[in-house]
Image (cartoon, rainbow, N blue to C red; front, side):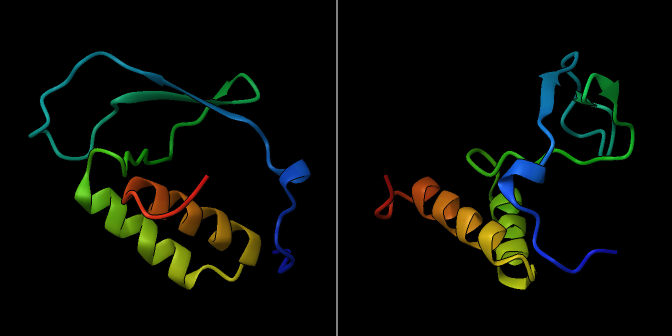
Length: 88
């Protein structure tokens, strides 16, 4: 695996579409139709940190532990924006 951080130009655009409404008590289930370059992605997990405290905590953990400095900086900016701290 490449240990160099991915530049923004190398990151593929990922499109997420809301699926059919489902009971929030179902646990892990297909809730979103995620596609990458038009192809369905089956093994993924969508987080909504703006509306879910557990997702925000997961985002903080990822920003803390990723070795990709550019990604970490982008995640911290997003986290601060969600919490209404500074930002653009």
